[in-house]
Image (cartoon, rainbow, N blue to C red; front, side, top):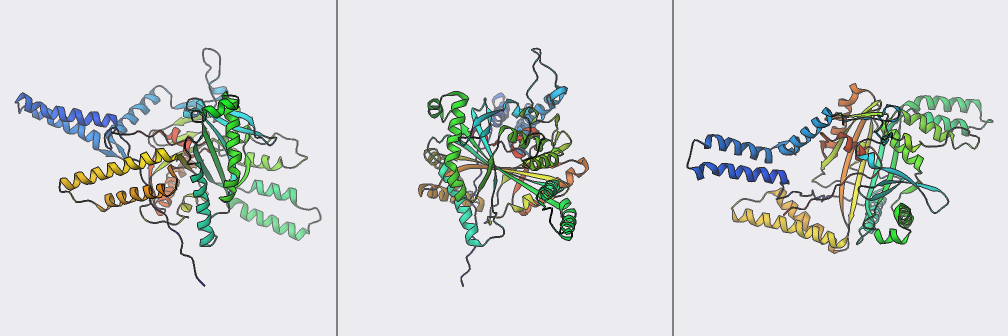
Length: 508
C-alpha cells in the first residue's frame, strides 16, 4: 500500500515598500540632508566645522537606517510623537452612550471608536427573503458582508484530503483574481475563546426528553459539569469586501448609491456559494445587522459573550419570548476604550495586537498555523487572514518590477565585488518561481496576518502575550507588536470586518 507524501508550502514574499529603495520619504530626506551636511566642511575648507557637521550627519543616518523593534528610528519617533499628542489632547480616550460628550449641534458621536467611527451598518435584502448586514466605509468606498462558516479542518484527515482541501481554497482565491474584479478584499477571521458551557447546557436542557432514564440524565449532567468549564469555543467568519470605485458601472446599473452597491455585493456573494462549498466551507449564516453588531460587541466586551450566546441558543426555542438574537447596532461598540502605547483597554478587557512580519522561510505543512489558536483558559485569541486578489495585468507588472529590482541589486553587487548571500539568492529564485506560476495560470494575492490576545485580568496579560509569541515561534512566524497603533490593529485583528492591507506605496 502506498502512502501519500504530505505536501509542503513556502514562497511568501515580503513587499518592498519605500520612496527610494527601502527608505520612506522621510528617511530619504534624512539621508539627503546627512550627505549635504557632511559636505559642508569640504566646501568651506574648514575642518573645525567638521566637529559639528559630521556628528549631525551621523545622527541623521542613524535615524534613517536605525531599527527599533522592527521599525526605523524615524518611524518610531513619528509614532511616539503622534501618540503623545493624542494623549495630551485626550484623543486616545473613547466614551460612548451616556458618557459621550455632545457636539455643539447636540448630536452624539459614533458608537465605534478610532478608525471604525466612519463605519456604518446597513441593511439589505439577501435575495432569499432575509436581511443582510453590510458594513459601509464611506471614506474607503467599501462595502463588506460577513458570514459565519464552519469547516471540517485539516488535522485529523489523511494527506490526500488535506491536500485537496488546500487546493480547493487556493482555487477559490484564484477565482477572485480577475481583471477589474469588484471584490477587493477577502478576510478569514477566527476566534478561540474560553467557554463555561452555558450555551451547551441550555441546548441540552431543551433537547432532553422527559422520558429519558434518570441515570442517563444524571451521567450527562456530571459530564457537563466536568467538561463545560474547560471547553473552548471557536468562531470562524468570512468577510467579502466590495470596492465601489471598481464596481462603479455595476452599481449604477443596479440603481446607484448604497442600494445599488448592496445589490452588487449580494450578487457577488451568491455567486461564491458553489466555490466556497468546493473549498470545504459551510456557510452557517450571513450576518444580519444585529449579528454584525454582536460580533463587534463580543470582541470589545468578552464578558457579554456568555450571556449573548445563551440568549441566541434560547431564541431557537419557538416558545421563547425574550429579546431578539444579536445586538442593537447602536450598542455595538464599547462603553469606554483607552489606547495605550502597547496595549488597548476596552470595557473590562485588555488586548495586545500583533502583525506577522515574517512567514517561515523553510517548507511547512498546511497545519503550521494551528498552534496560534490553542485553547487557553486565561485568554482569548483572534487571528485575521486578509487577502487582496490582484488582477492578471497588475500581477504581471508587480512581479516584473520585483524581478527587475532584485536583478538590478544583484548586478550592482557583482560590479562592486560583493558576494551574494543565500537569502538574496533564495529571494530571487522565489520571485522567478512566482512569475512562472502566474504565467501558468495561478493567481497572485497580497496577504497579511494579524493576531490579538485578550484578557479580562490585567495580571494575566504579559503571560498570555508570552504564550502567544512562543506559539508563533513554534509556527515559524515573526511577530511585531503594533506599538503606537493598538486601536487600529485591534480593528483589524480582533474584529471580522475585513480591515487591514493599506494601499501599496510604489518606490522609484
